[in-house]
Length: 332
Image 1 (tube, rainbow, N blue to C red):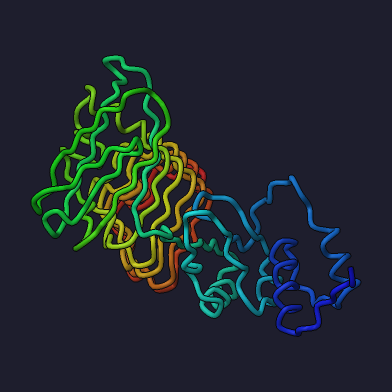
Image 2 (image 1 turned 135 degrees about the vertical axis):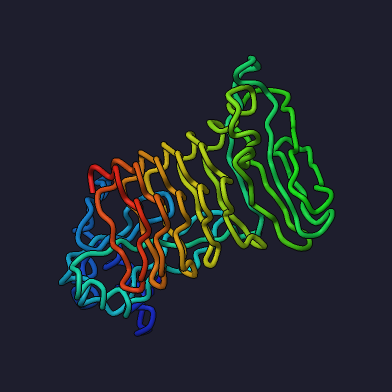
């Protein structure tokens, strides 16, 4: 079989960009010798360590790390990571805005935004044995803007179509313990992810009975189309939540992610102008947070009690940091 050589300049540039993104270098590469050398230098099986400028995936995985000087030499932002079921929407900073910030402050954390590829909002849950404290029934508190416009696929072949336009509690009982993937499909209107001090996404949030155990069952969330906000209290006290991807333009309300103790990282997507009051309060596992360019306000107690948060790059667009926004951030 004849050997095929890449001759396209655009193709070579694309390959070089991929090598640089993976290897953490900004150097020009001469084809083919320096391509081969750079590939050999890429470390495998090694966890990247945070640097001056960090690029995070939605789950907190470091995908690229640069010194401030290396970052200023970039001509493009790194390629987005690829995931089955998720479509990348871009980083929450542009290259120009990020370079200006790093020039002024010397560091920055940048996050990738995603939306589900099929538009469905998904929850990954774990149902344990059928005991009084960990029963087989799971609850969702959901609303919709159009009657009958939202259907819940529970992950075991059963479905429920929502009725009315007010938020209500929907229960589903599984036949056996296990891990289930719930898909919430919007066929018309919008999905209302809004709760209150009594109800969160998983049911009663102020009760320590059977409904409260649902808070520990939600492990991962990926928001899809036709969702405009991660509303007040919606994931409050979800102590088992390990990661969440929030699409561009979806706002984060008060108490939305408070006391999510297993959450270690969050990308606040572009389009947000406010980090809601108490939105991440007491999320004690949070170590890194990427705030987007264009944010103007950090709400009251929004980060209070985030004991493991190690640094915070506040965009220069922020004009208001409310009272008690960051008390108790002992590692900051």
